[in-house]
Length: 334
Picture 1 (cartoon, rainbow, N blue to C red):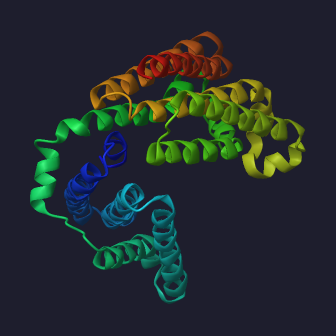
Picture 2: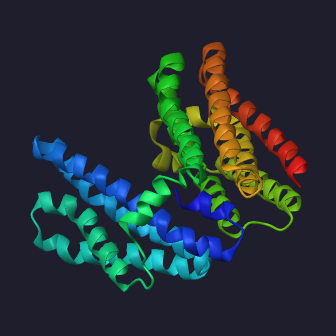
C-alpha cells in the first residue's frame, strides 16, 4: 500500500502528497483488523486469547513503525529512515529487557508487542508533518485505489505461494520433506538477506540504467547463492546439525538443487523490483499473480514426479523462467 506505489511515482511533489494518504489508509486498515482480533480475544481464553491479544497490540504497532519507515525512505532518504527504524526496534528491546524481570509470565509474553506500540506512538507524536487523516485514508481507498490495489493482489499471491509450499511438500513427499525444505531455507539465510536488502534498495532508490543494474545485481545474487552453497558443502556436518537439526544429511543431499533455486530466486527478485517504476500497477499485479501461479504449478508437478527433489527443481525452473521473462520485459520497457 505504500512502498510500491511510492516507487512508481517519479516526481518528488507527487510522493509528498501521496505519502500521508497511503500511510493513513494503511493504518486505518490495520486498526480495523486489530479491533476484530481484539474482539476475538475477548471471547476466548488460555493460550488462544494470549496469542490474539498479542496480535491486537502488535499489528498496529508494526504497521505504524514500518509505514513510517517506508514514508521516510522516499521523502527523507534511506539512511535517516533506517536510523528511525533501528531506534524503534532498539527501544522495544530496551523496554522489554527492563520490564521483563518485574512482570508476570503472561505479561512477559505480551511485553514485546506493548513495548513496540509504545515506541511507535511516541515516534508518531514526534513526527513532523504527519498529515494523517480520515479524509486522506478515504482518498487512498477510494479515487486512488487503482494506484496500489494491484500491488496488494500481487503480493497476496506471493504470500499464498509461500504458505502453500509446506502443504504441497507434505502432500507429495511427506512431512519430512517440509522440515528439510525449511531447514534449507534457514541454511541459505545469507542469500535470503541479500535478496531482501537488494530488493529494498532497488525499490526505494531505483536505477537510471535498469538493464545494467539487473545484470550486475543478477551476477551478485547468483554469486552469493553459490558461495552460500559452497560454505554449506564444506562445513563440518556436525556444525551444521547444531543449526539445522536432525534433517541435516537430507539437506546436504538436495544442496545442489537448493543452491540453484536460491540463485534463481535472487536473480528473478531483482528483476521484479526493477520493473515496478517501468510498468503500470495493473501489469505488475498481473505479473506477480502469474509468477506465483507458475511457481505453484511447477512445485506441484515436480513434487508428484520426484518428491522433494522434483519440487525444489520445479521451483528453480519457475524462477529461471521468470528471470528470463523479466529480462525481456526490461528490454521492451527501456
